[in-house]
Length: 141
Image (tube, rainbow, N blue to C red):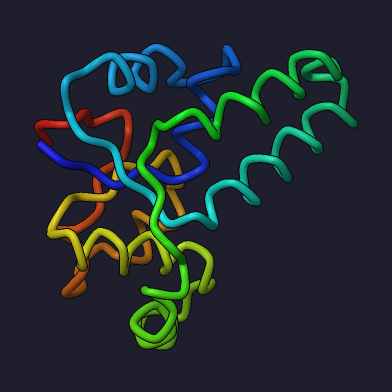
């Protein structure tokens, strides 16, 4: 299968935190993982925050920053999704950044797997509900 993943999932590939094993299982699967290239900036911002808070050290941050450029997930230009993402953001009253992932999922007809509870809640009971799966629910949800 194909899935779109967001930064909340990919960071968990490298950082032992809640849902780390579920995220690693997804990475180890035979599934094709996709994402808009926005993910690189979101991940590097997250690892910067984690470094500043002392949750990870600088060498680990550098390893993560290099690893996210190594082919997983497959990246696509965020600009391909920006117009649709804006429509979704306005419809859901939710930040455009998350909606870029949602528009990517719609474009590829591939569920978005996220650990972002706010995004799952925003999509619930809308036309976008079927596009979003929480990481804790797994790939087969």
